Length: 274
Ligand SMILES: [Zn+2]
Image 1 (cartoon, rainbow, N blue to C red):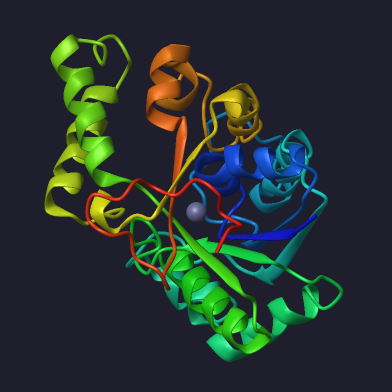
Image 2 (cartoon, rainbow, N blue to C red; image 1 turned 45 degrees about the vertical axis):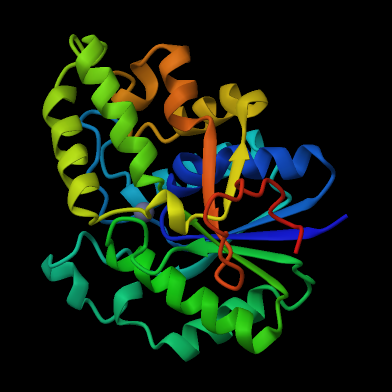
């Protein structure tokens, strides 16, 4: 049995990006630990979800615990920083926000939380935090710093496969499958544009691991749905047909920073293997 630590920036990131892998590892008997840097206080809230006076960070904490339970997570911890908000927003300057944190000090905090664990695997984001969010970039920096200091043998960077995303979007647009989903057309165009300019995720050639999470897709979607303050029921994630959801989210992509994949070699599938 291994211990796998997933380090995320905000409640919902775990469900959107690594839910299938977390569920798969938990189901295989491994200990899955989730550490989240912030409570997502700066998230854009779905109208009508919060009760009068309810703080978004509190709601998102509850949502995270519900999602983590669904995924078989053994332990959930918060690193205790404040959400920095989107890139270039004034909240990036809040002295309590994660973006302003000293990397060494934050890495020490992570180490203190994990002092009773013996992690075999640490999962963080890629260098650009997947899509450039300051808290995601900071997760990469802090997690990487701690792993090096603590001697964690296996570090993997979760990423988006921008080539696969571009293909999925192009086929959805071409087949008309994107029609009828409110507001999705523009969103897909934006994603396609960003995939083309390379400003999010990674090229397939730079990705080492493809983890197929098909058997856990129902749980992944249910985990995404628990984040109702962020992800409305009529969103792309929750409203596309199961078949398209499987195509878009049935594989989770990772990079082994120590060992690139040779051109033409198949993707590796076992995150824990060296
Ligand atoms: Zn996030």
